[in-house]
Image (cartoon, rainbow, N blue to C red; front, side, top):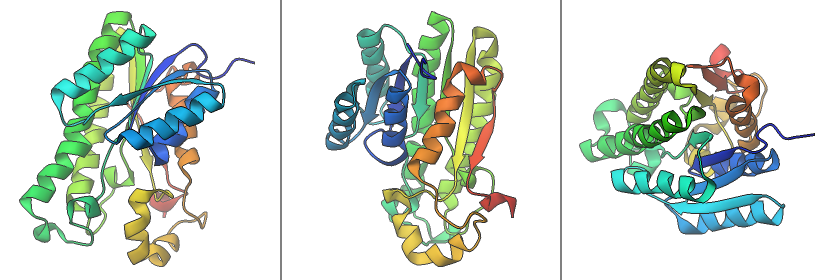
Length: 255
């Protein structure tokens, strides 16, 4: 039986670890040729090695998603290697603690911290989308999934610029979905809740018991939970899904 993404080519940013790595592994398992992109070379190499060891096909692409030229070159390299770009998962992002703002209220964020958060989590997604949309329009279609967050649909204390960036990602997703639908391009977002990754370790160390008490299923999510959602959204089985934001949070936002 053919995989969900059999014969497709895919680009995954933030693919060196966590949700990105889990998605890259699943995409390859489902038949896609995968380009694993990240700013850190070591993580990329590990993900590519895992895919190749399992019999899949993968390539690496080192890029800073906040740099226009690097993003454009990344997409061009994928197309040069694979001939086209069918799926893109814009997943690279950072958390508040990574800009020195962990646990800080809105007025306590520095301007530098705010700017960095927006640059990576919002502008970086837009830069990737711009190059991906141009390529997909030329070839006659494709599917894009952006990583937003439950922070894109609700407010979360001490996560001011993170929440702003993820609300922005959903806005970009909806707008592009409308603009490019007639060109055969679908654009959707996934909204993870609290997932077992390096990015959530800091907040869980501070508020883990409190947060888990608010999750009806009673556990954190796994990167593979998000990967499954993304894989389906990129597949032809989701051909009528466009402009949607899929919440995958164990029921956290339903309470």
